[in-house]
Length: 284
View 1 (cartoon, rainbow, N blue to C red):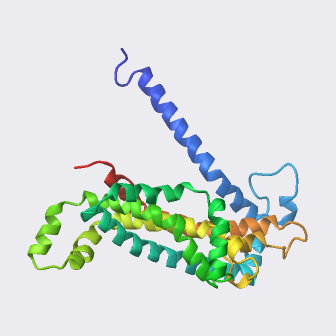
View 2: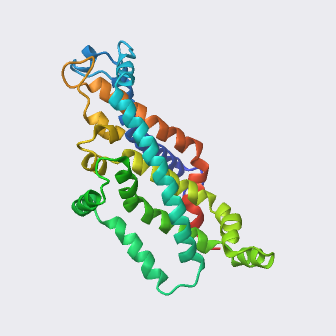
């Protein structure tokens, strides 16, 4: 049997490192390709064979998208909609999770199963019914329709994750707070809620990403109202400022711009995200 540092050990290390590198390249390459395409002039984008490094670096594609009023308006709409959806999902989800995780309710398990089952339906299957409902409520063509409908696929996940966190908190904390004179609501938002910060950050960030990247609902509910469209829809409607054909460079530049905020948020909250994804996995 080979020792700790035998040939089998080193082969395993090399194989694992190669796998990590391959996964890293596979996930990073699309963003790299979008970035170099955004930095290339039009003549390099259409030349064959394609080059993996730009021969000439230009910022004209970025300048073009920031002169595009529809793109800037889409960025603003996406920001407002995503932030409102995150706040709404966390507020509603935390109350629901507290009730399902800490209070004595009949059928809590089945309620959770029903909530989780809502995420199993593809968006296209619920779109016709939502479209009729949005029309009847007079919200069609407004960002309010997006803020409301996005909760359909963000709220179930938020409730499910937060419920496991509230359930894992020691009961002694709640009892001590009640003995000290706290009301149930004060116990919730002063004692228990701060302890679920990793879960709040994780679910909030994933909710933000899902809302920021959503396309189908945004296209359907704002099709005739360009002023309410989000950035994902705005990008698909680029007609080109520099290029007179398909504006690949501008589309790539816009893709980089809308991806950077998500990367920055993940890097800032990466420690909280890891805690949120793993803390509820093991019961103490």
